[in-house]
Length: 105
Image (cartoon, rainbow, N blue to C red; front, side):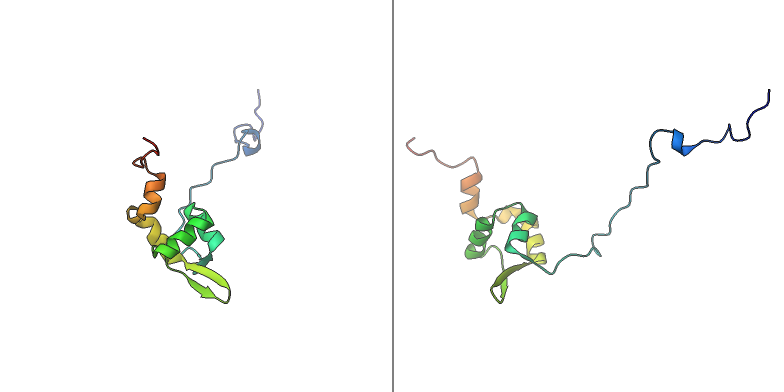
């Protein structure tokens, strides 16, 4: 009994799923990132709402600068704030923490 010449070769089209690509690690040190973010983009990066960002700016927890009428927050400042989460202002901790007193108790 004669075998076909290509019978022993694997055909990738007939396997059912594509071959896995090797996982590539992104170099975050050289990743392209903005110098500064708008209030809306900063809120999205931190997972906060824009009014909370304004509150953090008023309390001095975050720094920002203006260009014309736009208020921008330096990206390094967002990274610093995310790293220093333990330095969150007491006004935010009391609001979201479990130690707040119940009114009328």
